[in-house]
Image (cartoon, rainbow, N blue to C red; front, side, top):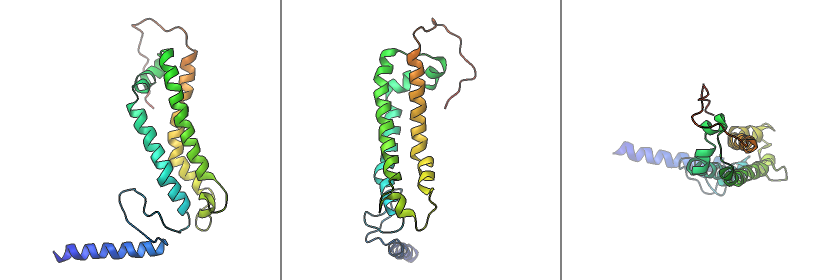
Length: 177
């Protein structure tokens, strides 16, 4: 029992020290949630922007793409590889994908802002100048690239006016991206 109490005391001391080092007036740790809404460490505004906006945008886009039956069906890897589509569904999907793209591009613009006390400037004291770009590439950029590829494929599918009659041959190997 004393080891459990000691462990809890040790965690609270560690958290208070971390809060002090990060110049946070309030500090908690919970998965990947926001550490604190009131801190002043270098890069804080980039961290805050990512946690409050970009991360939620990525989660929203992933959730919507995983549950949108038009995208799951008419823009599935199978449909894209075999050039199978239906114009009406593509018209329904296009504004959804463009909305996702706009949302992610807006997040990138916010992260790249270069005004005083914004994301990029706040990281100057401790980080390389391309740190924001690297973070974008690793997070928001990956999802944006996926959306852009789907939009490109959708535009190619929209050009198709005649489809082969079923039963059509399956192209091998099936490429899943």
